[in-house]
Image (tube, rainbow, N blue to C red; front, side, top):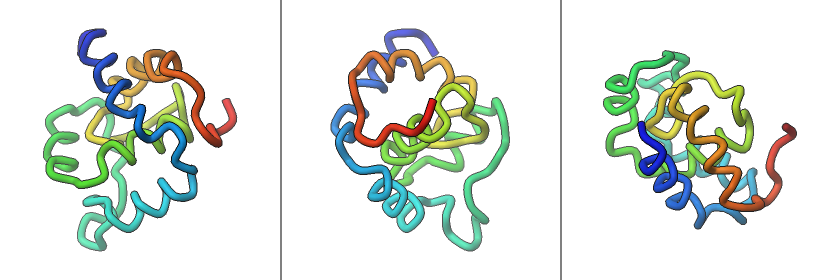
Length: 108
């Protein structure tokens, strides 16, 4: 992904800046496509964009999931979250940080 795409994703997450982390957690765990018993929870597959697209395609809470993972893990992120691979999220992280303060951002 290039920087312009990553900046656009960071901007897309701005509306979630002040949503409390516990609310995001509830939304993602109750409405996330990967949280169904058949899916078995979020996967730890690394570096596969096609897998991320297939797994998260059509998920109604991709943005919430991505915001939650960036808060919780930051640059140490692993697996597929919010339709993105860990490498893509690591590249997104500095752009996300520049977008401003977040409520209850996890420890860094």
